[in-house]
Amino acid sequence: MEETVMIHIDATQKNDRIDKVISTKNEEWSRSQVQQWIKDGQILVNGEKTKPNYKCSLGDNITVIIPEPEALDVVPEDMQLDIYFEDSDVIVVNKPRGMVVHPAVGHASGTLVNGLMFHCKDLSGINGVLRPGIVHRIDKDTSGLLMVAKNDFAHEKLVNQLVAKSVTRKYEAIVHGVISHDVGTVDAPIGRDKKERQSMTVTDDNSRHAVTHFRVLERYKDFTHVECQLETGRTHQIRVHMKYIGYPIAGDPKYGPKKTLDIDGQALHAGVLGFEHPRTGEYLEFQAPIPADFEHLLKVLKNR
Image (tube, rainbow, N blue to C red; front, side, top):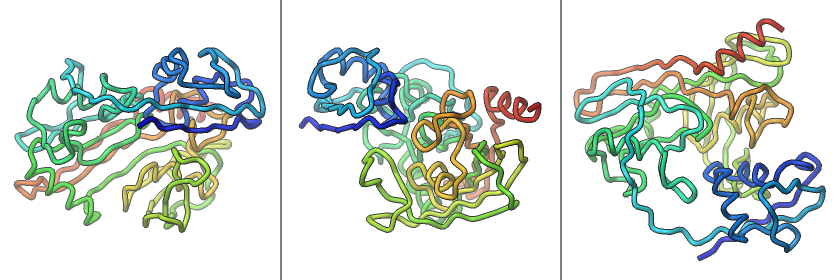
């Protein structure tokens, strides 16, 4: 069944290209997918068909008609994966910013799952054919470490650790504003935003308990470099929580300000991942350095 999404253009989106505006509404919609929908007449501006390079005007009403999903065959793809650990039960991989974790509408190929299926061919089936082996996700425009289960035994053991909050997950981020205190905790429930259904927000309505701990690594003029540690793992949790306390993540197209640092996607990196091996019980911890563009931003901020 087709789904229809309505978007009203406000002052912050005036003069932006329509494909950019729509693709930021849902992280699983790529700009190329949006452009194809426009060509297919699936996207209307004030009831009329449009072009991919149309620049939005204040007050425009955009209708996005999402076609019924087609059955996807996950095709293994030969790609370079940054693997930090692998045995017969688990893979730990460092995902680059811009890569989607698993196939979905608009992302049938080029995902981490496509690469994993070519690499090892044996992944757990608990999450179905589109998400084999995926125990937890990180957003498309967030880089960093993920653990992947190669069989159902390992998958169940790893999920149980997530539920028990015994997995170590630490992120580095650059946020807008200068945080005056060195450490803090955000304990605020997260649920779907009623006005923007593709976004999450802090709310008491139909929400789930969410806790993020943070500490300041370094302060700059107008920005702060922080480490965030997840106690829970809700959708967009760090991004929503940092926006909620007034320090949105730099480069975040969904939750951050338009005027931000020059980075393609949010300056958020899942740098530390620790867990007990599902079969041996040994505690394993891995650390991936921040990507080059993130490191470049820190140098720019230091030199301001």
